[in-house]
Length: 475
Ligand SMILES: [Zn+2]
Image (spheres, protein in one colour):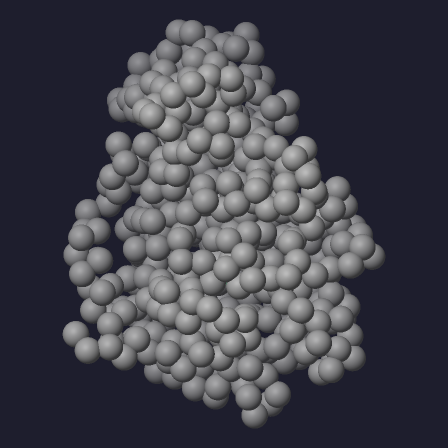
């Protein structure tokens, strides 16, 4: 295929064939073994290149290349759209590895008091380190579900948005919340919950201050009460109404654990998905984390409504779930299923590559060797993650007019010796675990395996200091 020669703003209108290469570009990624575009036709270009102008894909092609101000060498590499992380709790890397063995409810009740120590500096440093870690594994867009708001902690969301800007990542922070403490029959202690009015007012403030609805936005805010067992039904309902009014997305945990079924039946007289529908969340504005325990009828309801799911295979495995997320059934029902790392302690690695491989393996454990192919997983990690975030066509694919977010995966060295048949299958079966280059909005945030934003070493030293304090350890 040839390429296009138009301004980025016009590029999406152009067909991808019978065009001349653009005369110039800001960035050219060249020499790839294979470029996988994840477009509607499933286009894959052996020996392909990607040209970027003004932060947007200007063209993809083979053959004659445009001149470019900056060139990234992709020789021996697979090029894919950047991966989209649809569920995370960045602040939890301050308590990485704490309470490594236990059920979800045991783990949460152990950590809630520790998380009282979160403050603005902790939110900033955990986001900086966590987003850098994600970028190294080819992630270009990440959500964050920050739901702990200790009294007097400051503006935690503004702090993490500042960090995302410094690292250069496309960022979807969500305004999480917990309002139902132990005295109200919930799980968390009083010290980390807020009241409904406080949560709603601050949700609106954050949307007005930071949410950017324009195409190719770098920051979008969603609203995200934590779970059925930590907020009131009234807050869930009011949040859905506020999201509708502000035209932002909704996120929460749903059907994560067998204990949640029991809790919802005893507390609300309904199963979790029924409760979710009861409070007005069964809508394509919502995407939910985990969704391991829906029955067949609930899967059909979620699909019909267009609710997205963030599949978090490592977290589910670490917490020893007795069931595997029914990914193939959810996808067959029309549910967009993206991938998520989830937070530290339920998954101490923030790597979308690891989640991708784990999604393939767990999917095959559940459904047999043909249940989940590497290309299915790549679609989930890119296109379907974008659908979860309401950004299909804008991120998660390498097509003219889409955001210039991509990952360059090395496929050389001993781990790839002999892996000649299919670079996409090799991507998950052989490695490489880390990207050589990660590009967001046309800017390398990782170049030659190194985070480009200055200050990582300083951030890690400061992070260690805050983690030591939060964990109550002596320096
Ligand atoms: Zn989570």
